[in-house]
Image (cartoon, rainbow over all chains, first blue to last red):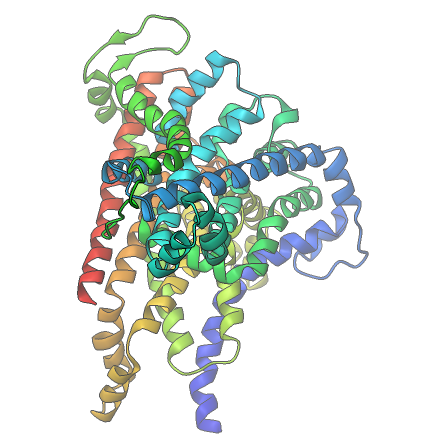
Length: 275
Length: 300
């Protein structure tokens, strides 16, 4: 017993220190969001003495986070639905169908997965400007779908490639068309792969910053991260208010992460490795 | 892509194109053609408004490498590699070893928490750390006063000397959990018999780490290094949300310079040249990752 603890204690200590380094700043933000201005300055990490939702109310209405939230939900939903649907189709073409020329196409898609958004933002900015599409949802949705399908296609094609061939052949013999085989036979099997894809694209789109910063000028079209960045410039000294805004931005991704943790981690490691 | 997919009798082999086309078209229009266009624009002098584009060949690139701002930005990105890549890989190694040396209670709790910064918007991370580093009310300075190190107090993000390491250390904060989780996944693949055999031979934990764990994690270390290096090279959101490149140019990074040149100052060609250089560096690194992974697959 004592020997075991002698071994374990230092390990726990180091782990707890690094865990606190991650948690304390986040906890400080959460606690601050429920405090009043005067309480924040004195004890940053204590529990709020008088819990208040006033900061959230103010951020939501005066800070227009209700508008930013709506924009983020619209853009993210469209991107997730669009990219996952398109990636399923294209992944199927790569993984299951003959599709002449797919090696070349695969290479072209891979390029998009690897380059940073900085590589495309300048022409996109000029074109959207010329087409009068800046300050519309389209300017945020379409490039993000383009980027997401490059990862999504690679991700789904590696699933479809490894899908059991016998099952597909059996379905065909039973008279399933390729289209039916995809949706009736393979999609139920693809659930883990597509769940991972959904949560990753959700997170990337929800947190996307550069595109939304460049494409949107009017306040009413900002997404949450851009809204928060401007909000920060305006209310630097009002920590509780900013903390409330920050929590509104972070909560959805953190919740999804907590629920789908397994898929998240697998996808992000897989994504890194696929790179 | 190694299996051959055959068309069924009577089926057109081009059918796949119908499935492929929608995704490919969106990708082509909004990502691939813009990549080519960025590359092309880097050979022109253009303000983005007039019709007139002047072809100037490599002049943007030549100017680039004699521009002290670009050099400053690139060297800042290199400093960020220390904070985004090297420090997190070391911490990640330490933590993953501590978590796996013996079964430990709370394993999945530690893993969940340490990975958390990865899923939070970088703007939120910026808000959190601007508060942590606040010169007056920030917890870091408060803590320093508490332990009687008042003379260490700094206006961290506003200081010419400390702004860059301060922003960099936020990067370490974001990345070390990611590295740890990557290594944990790698360690699961190392056969336990290796450790058992080493124990029988009387090897110390340290020797086991050097001779079994480290070699076993080779490809994960490669992946972790390169992924985080790419993150260090493309950093934008965090700098925007904390210092906007300041004070002066002390935390200026390449991503921010592209934004400033092309979007704020309408120097399209110049911005495009910077973007091209950055993309080429990142692509080279990304290909390296793939090589690491291929070696890995060759081993198995």
